[in-house]
Length: 237
Image 1 (cartoon, rainbow, N blue to C red):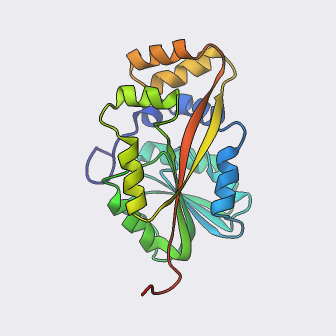
Image 2 (cartoon, rainbow, N blue to C red):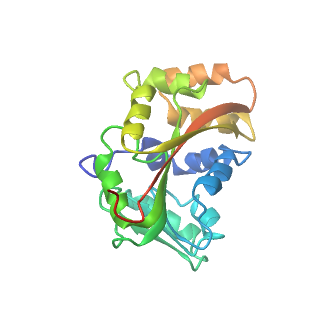
């Protein structure tokens, strides 16, 4: 899909899905994000929506205990890759669609999950409104986003995105009624080649060179924000 009203390009996974798979396997090696997700939005026996599911990396984890899982991905070439990944899971399906136009009925899911996909602060209001439409009363939107205040990854992010203000992003989500929990994780790689290849799809050549110098070994800490907003169960007066 072209850059436009519905979709902003994700060059890392769009252009290098194999390397992004390496990145997914390296992230959160201690399972801290999954631990927090289970605390704030237990999906056991419930219907889950994964927005911007990419190649479907997280779908099997949700499917292990959810009633049903739907992955929605805006970039058409990634959809068959996700479908192949979950082909043997009877409670999972994958659909083409955007965060602003989810191919889902009203009030059809209990948990909507988006990890480093679309919901980056001011400007994502249409996607939040669309999630509100598909959530059942009491359902929850969970956004897992990188914390650009956390070193060293946040330093690299801000070097490439000097106009990105993580404090303004926090203020935006507070205004929109989200709760926030910060999580520190580790990214750990099998070898230097894997580590460097991932840094080179995430950052400009200049910043990737800096990052590879900053990391002498095979791992580094990365901070995340886990943002949650629950749909009311009834009228609020």
